[in-house]
Image (cartoon, rainbow, N blue to C red; front, side, top):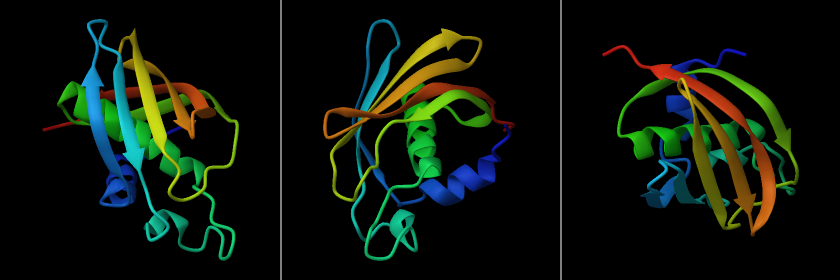
Length: 128
């Protein structure tokens, strides 16, 4: 599955905030993510019953990788992605990303302390 870098950039621009980003000795990236009801992520998804779209969750993971590695990437694929629960506005989220090697990362996104999604995301260095 190919997802363009420009799509991820458009989607993540001020639509959510990455906070408390940390990098462990094993290069595991961990970050808190915030998004409120006023975020464009929820616009039309769905009126009166807002749900965080899956693409939003993947964009949050991607942004955590870029910030944790302090470099720009392009998403080259996602695999084994499972969405486990509905994520509502103003729920505390935490992203944890672990390198698998060869620009591949396993990830999990927790919402209110419960698994929301998990999978593998593959990236490649962005052209300068």
